[in-house]
Amino acid sequence: MFLAFDDTDSTKGMCTTFLATEMIRAIDGLDLIGLPRLVRLNPAVPWKTRGNGALCIRFGKGKGRRTLAGRIGRKSIFSFDRGEEPEDSNDLFSIGAELLSNWSRVEEEASPGLVMSKVKPSPAIYWQAVRRVIEREMVENELDRIGARSIGLCGGRGIIGATAAMSWVPHDRTYEVLAYRKRGRWGSQRKITKEDVKLLDERFPSTFNNYDHDSDAVAIAPHSPCPILFGIRGDKVEDLPMAMASIRSEAKDRWLLYLTNQGTDDHVISVAGGLDPGSTYRMSGNIVRTPRTLPGGHVLFQLSANGSIVDCAAYEPSKGFRGKVRALQEGDKVQVIGELREQPRTLNLEKFELLELVDLKEKVANPRCPECDKSMQSLGSEAGFRCRKCGRKEDRSKAEFASVVRKIEPGWYEPPVCTRRHLSKPLKRMVARHRC
Ligand code: ATP
Image (cartoon, rainbow, N blue to C red):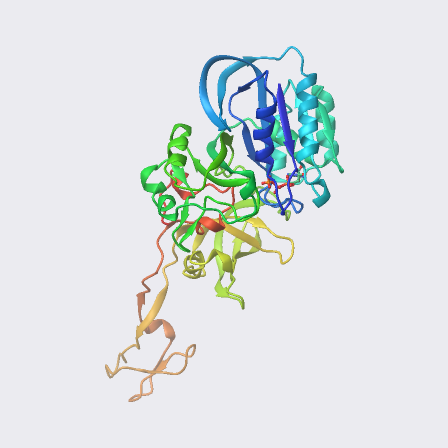
């Protein structure tokens, strides 16, 4: 039986993943089948609180191999490979609904939703919800079709995210271990040893997005007053508990492993037709206007792709990444990935690949007069040359040119860790040749 929920938190507190740990704690008679799923949805959705994450947990009577998936207080949490459906799911739904109502920050604009179903909704719901903005009606129709039970509070918009999380069938996946704080410390400054975080990449190469070396900042801990102490992401689930244990920190209240779509680029649409703001696109083309820096430090260039001109932007917070963008030139061929914003209408770069460099030439010497063998005089940047001695004229093309040495090589480039999106696939996870 799948139980999914979303939209329980606010910027002032809570976290929907914490509710997942509370559900597992409270639902005693049933086992966890597989790992709980933390599913990120379209990052461009305007009403998200932070990372647009929704949760789905499968409960049942556990069968087969069991592995440690977490610890809540003194209790070890195990996850089973497979399971049988519970005989009675009424309790599951009522416990879920009660916890949803107890923990959701409805007084701070949360709009929680809970969905329970034996059958998964169509994966098409996930693909729509991770890439576009979807209508509640479409979700409700699907829930009716599969015979799901649902409950929403304060509008219940969370039913959309909950249904989408339940419908996720991974084709690519990563894992995250989330460690939670003792309740008395919620809202206070987190105590985490920076040096331990710095070593994560080296000690556990299967983990990613741990430390931002550009800004010398820990990237595994949130800045909000939520219950999370830190989260470590990686490709090998078996490495994560050890990675977590390697971090000296304040006491943990609980921890749990999640299967996630983070770092998969599932949100990226390969452009085939028109572009609608509110989605993230991948497109290739030629730069038709060399990057320029705007007041405020944002860097903008124009790309000609799929028959239209798109303004691509690297905003100020992306820091050193902007230097790579500035090194691009008119005529370069690039592949870009970014979210299309409505106002101003720009493609906000998540990463780019420099495919081909234009052969940029610069004048290194004026031509010599074919009659007198003297260096000719320039008549201005567009006007050509004249021999001072015999008055002969030559056009600009007769000057001596050399290729400009470029400050960038073909390959992939991405912004620093702290400014990456949860769904963005880090270059570390990409098989293609890349440069950081
Ligand atoms: P978290 O803090 O858990 O990372 P979040 O708090 O940023 O996530 P929510 O508070 O869950 O985000 O708010 C997102 C809301 O948007 C939810 O109500 C969800 O149902 C809804 N939603 C998510 N994706 C879509 C989508 N593609 N189309 C329409 N609604 C969506």
